[in-house]
Length: 436
Image (cartoon, rainbow, N blue to C red; front, side, top):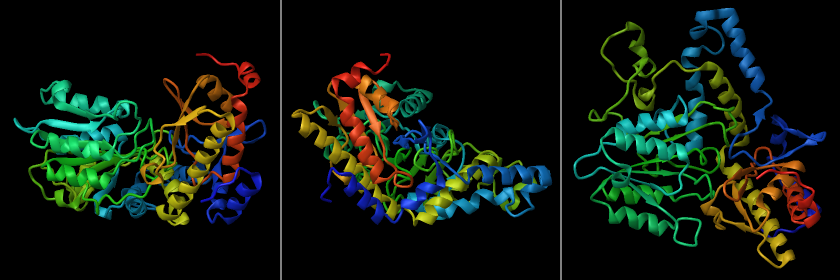
């Protein structure tokens, strides 16, 4: 795309955008009487307008049907979650029975590690991305400790090379090969939360399997952001949240993928619960657990219908938009345009005022750009916020901006570029109130 730094060009892209009307399905935060420019879908997606009605429908079912709501009405709660599975399976690239909706992300990560981290005397190490989101670090460290190992001996982190911000795929794969005889598990993020780097899930999975390891992924920043093919890539397991790019509300319900080849593996450990029991025999109340077929067998507790209602409101919009292929096409253009405008600012100033640490290759990133400010980083962040551009800040000096194809426009990208350019003017920074 030959981008141009003009409002007319941005308006032309919006006019050509087949997804432009989906913005009207979301509630946009207001700033000084107009829509804010919301680039924070990497932390929390916007609320679908239909979300309140979806919740109210279930509150009314509870009011009118009480316990019979599990079996009666237009959307009986017993099978409510199952209606969402096909849309979600399409988003993550799994078969329907390989996907389940349940719990929250770190809970699911622990449950899956119970099954898929099986250390032996020889193979007990876990390989993970360096600089992973802290919750992943805590979960993995606590799992190895549970099995009697010290983190320093059982966890291998793959870090970027000195002076670089993104990990090279060849370094990840070589590290797997170097530790092939020791690895029990390769557990990576799909996208690094800090840099926005999209990892090569297929290559990591293939190399991990050749090394004899199980391979799983935390897709918190990937699900609903980039196309995924978990089944085709032969991933063993994965989990994700729904409140970021899938717009299913703060603390929204999570999901898991379990490859079908593990369904009948009787050697897997599993923490069992009521909702994971065979549905056709669940109400016989047998004391002996019999897992539901597929990923549903990892469920524990009764599905939270209110959270599922929010998930339904959001997933239906993905289906209306045609799934991840058109969303990804627009996403690449949006993020590419933001990148172009940032580089234009640097060019106009004759120096690298803003360093983008997210990979420049669009195949190696999703929506997010992570920007390191050469100076006055926090003042610039607060200037953006004070002028209606909502991103987020990550210590020590990174601003994350994530245009989302369902509710952001090219005009917003252009306007954000103008505000970002204005932020580096000395008088603008001096007038910005902020605290370190």
